[in-house]
Image 1 (spheres, rainbow, N blue to C red):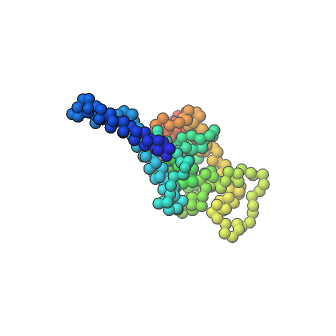
Image 2: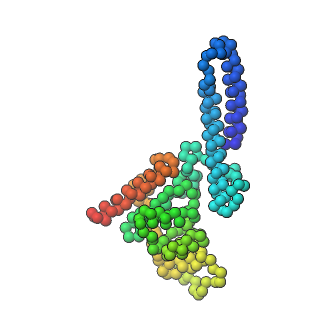
Image 3: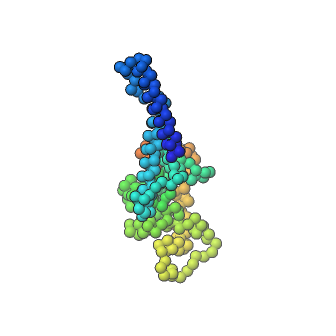
Amino acid sequence: MQEEEKRLRGEVKRLLEEAEKADKEEDARYGRDRSGDELPTELERRETRLEKIREAKRALEQRAREQAKSKGQPEEEATPEPKMQYNFTDPDSRIMKAGDGFEQAYNVQVAVEAGYQLIVGQLVTPAVNDKQQLKPVLAAVREQSGQKPAEVVSDSGYCSDANLKHLDQKKIEGFVATDRESYRDRSQPGPRGPLPKGATRVDRMRRKLQTKMGAAIYATRKTVVEPVFGQIKQVRGFRQFLLRGLKKVQGEWAMICLTHNILKLYRICYR
């Protein structure tokens, strides 16, 4: 964008000079009382493009300040990274890692109850990872289902000291993976004895998932939330959003989740 802005400034200056020269020639040829105040087409197109680039730069600067604030860094010193990107078609979306590379995308969240795989809370965010999403998802569950969950099972993407502290404060029993591998190897018995002095919340959660009870409860995740995503994406063929903009995408995802629940309730009641 910086290179494009510099190039466009030069073209705008050149076209303005050409327009001024053309105005003088037309005034001499047709008279000064003729209408001619419209921008030439080429100049108008470049001016519009230049304004869009400036708008994108302002958005990236604001995003950099927000990121600095979330990390506890000074906002006034934050500047966009050189590789920071902006999508002109859908500015609310972000580039996110997908199974086979990177895609322009949104991050969808669902909370699923264990009995019938009903979605009890859902939201859409442009955040690239899930670290900041546990609190919003729990709030969505309370708002959309009218209940506070008694237990939460989630993968390592949601694991942080702040999130585990939030579960404690809300008196919600948590079973949150601390990393991608620690809960998978069950060939060896888990460690015994008291935790070392100064153990963090993450350390305590890791030990909890290494117990037979913790491992068994965490294992239910693969039969609760993962099948829901499989049913939506594979069975019903919903692979991408058809709308643009966070607000519209939120509405589209809400409709997808509602449809999922209606189908589940139909099968529960009539089959």
